[in-house]
Picture (tube, protein in one colour):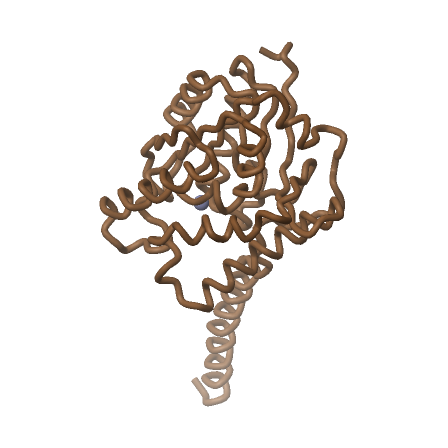
Amino acid sequence: MDAAVRRDRRWKWILGVFGTLGLILGAFIWWLPWDLTLSPTKPGLRRPDLLTFDQLSQGNPRILVITAHPDDSEFYMAGTLLRLNQASAELRLVVATNGDKGFYPFSDPAPLARTRQAEQTAIAKLWGAKDVIFLGFPDGRLHNGDELENAIKKQIEDFRPDTILTLESEHHRRASHSDHRRVGETVAKVGPTCPGVKSILFAETGERDLVVDISDLLERKFELLRMHKSQFEDLGKGRKDFVARIIRDDAEAAGKLIGVKYGEGFRVVLIPSASK
Ligand SMILES: [Zn+2]
């Protein structure tokens, strides 16, 4: 083989390797959720006539909050829950996982789960939850299926809420935690079949039908979040600021839709009573 052929082969080999690496890197960059926001904003309220906060909160409604992790209720709806409590709603929180992962996936799971559940229980009392129930599924590994459906259905039938507040089920897979989506999907499936449920509100959403004015409650929301000490106390300043910024940005974006400083947005599903 002469030198020219050998050189030619070497170049093909080098181009092949670097070309493949380039493609892998390009695919990885494409996959990364660079534009990380709590809820990718769509312009305007989708269907503002569907449900108002006054309609939601009138007549001491029973509100069941169903989330994935201990801290989701504060992250995505603390302001709304505080307002519902002020309006004398009857509130209960159900958390699907036991919280044994959190921000620190390599810490010992059992004590972390105990700590996070104690934190969540104490904080939920501050926004008015009379009961806090943990379904005990492993954190980060929720699966759709009979087990989760039956556990959630049992909680709905036990509490008989007028309204369920939960996490968005229709997110793009890169834009939210899979546990959140699976809780949302399960509630969307079983909620409408349970007697008495009139509406389901999905938080952490870009499809906002209802925005609740939380302008005077955002600082209280931050206070409640900070009480999840196992999650936030040891975070570096950069990450703490990042978390605060995405919450504030999201509240601002939602508030803008109804002309107030800060808001929390929900996608609303009304359930006709004839469907059960
Ligand atoms: Zn979560």
